[in-house]
Image 1 (cartoon, rainbow, N blue to C red):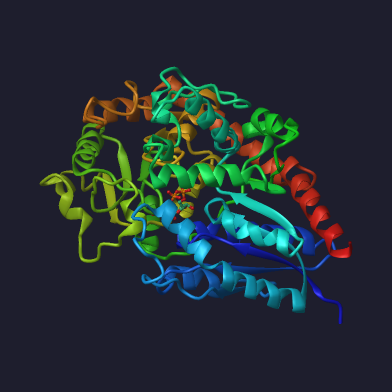
Image 2 (image 1 turned 30 degrees about the vertical axis):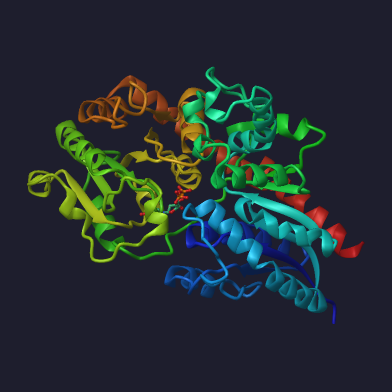
Length: 482
Ligand code: UDP
C-alpha cells in the first residue's frame, strides 16, 4: 500500500497556540485533498504537566486525516531553575522534548512519507530535527508580516546597538524604521520582549528564536496581500529570507468553547444592529484593577451598549496565560453598583465568550481589543472596526499597523495611557464616541468592510492566499516523490 504523505506539526505548549495549528492544517488538507493528493497531519504536542481539558477537547475533535501524540511531559525536576517568563520556559520545554520528538519522527518515517516539520515560532528549536530527517523546516508564524519583518530584522538591530555598546535595546531613542516594513514604530510600540535587559534570559531567548527564523525553509503567514502586501513583498525579495507563504486569513469558524454561548447570543438578539461594543483581551490578556475601573466608568459614561468578557485583574498583562485563578469572581472587581446601573446597557460575562459568534452577530458594532493577531483577523473578516488597547507581545505593533496604515482601528487620542500607564475613563468615552458616533468611525467601518471583502477574495479559488497554499502544497508534494 502507498504510504501517506505526512506533515508533522509542533505547536507550543498551551491551548491558545494550538488553535491556529489546527485551523491551518484543516484548511491545508481541505485544499489539497480536494486536489487528489492525500496528505496527513500529525500534531506532536510538547507538554509540561497534564494537558488542559480545552487542549484535549480540541485534539479529540480532529478530523480523520489528522492525529496527535502528546510528547512525554517535561517534569519540574528536569527544569532546574525553571524560567518564570513563558517564552524561555516554552523554549526549554521544547528543547527537553527533542529526544522524544526524534523518536516520534522516526516512527512516522517508518509508516509515512514525511515531508515537512512545521513548528510554532517559539518551538523553533524542534526544527533542528528537520535537517536530520531531510525534510522541510517550516514555521507557522502566528502574527502578521509586519511583526515577521521585525523578527527577521531584530538580530541586525541588536548587533547595531551592540556596536553602540548599549546595554539595553531600549536606548535607541528615535522611531525605528524596520527594513521592509511600511510603517515606522516608536520604540515603545515594538514587541515587549526587546524591552527586557539585553543580558536577560527573556531577551536572549527572543534573539535566539529570531536568529533561527531566518534559517528556516518556509514561513507560513496568517496574513494576505491586501492587508500587508508591501511588507510581504519586501520580505519575499530578500535573498536571505525564508520562503514566505501568506495563506491567511485563517480563523476559527465557530468557537470550540461553549462557555457563555447561549447567554451572549440571546442577549445580542435583543440589541439594535451595530449598537454593541464588544470588549475582550484575548485568551489570557489581563488588565490592572485601576484600568478595569476606568474602562467600567468609561463604558457607563459613554451610554453605549457593551458586551464585556471580564477576567480578574492583574498587574501582569499576560498573567491569564500562566495562572488560572479558580474561585476568583471577576465581577467582584467592578465598581460598586456598576452591574445594577448598566443593567439595560450591557452584559458582562466572566472569563470567556464565543468571540466568533459575537463578531459575526449583526448587533456588534465595534471591538475593543488587545489586538492579538487572531482577534484582529476575526474582527476584519467580520467587518467589525477595532478600538486598539494593546497589552503585550507584538500587539502594539499590530495596533500601529491597524490604526496608522490600514485604518481599521482607532486608538485613544493621547496614546495608550496616561503617565501611570492607564487609559482614563475620559479617553475611553472619547474613543467609544469616535468609533460609534462620528464620521471618522464611519470611515473606519467602511475601510474594515473593504478589507473583509478583500480577505474573502484572497482565500477564494485562485485568490492570492489560495495560490500561496497551492505553491506550498506543490513544494511538499514534490518532496514526497523526490
Ligand atoms: N477567544 C474567544 N473567546 C474569548 C477570548 C478569546 O473565543 O473570550 C479566542 C479568539 O476568538 C481568538 C483567540 O481566542 O481566536 C485569541 O487569540 P489572539 O491572537 O487574539 O490573542 P491571544 O490569546 O493569543 O493573546
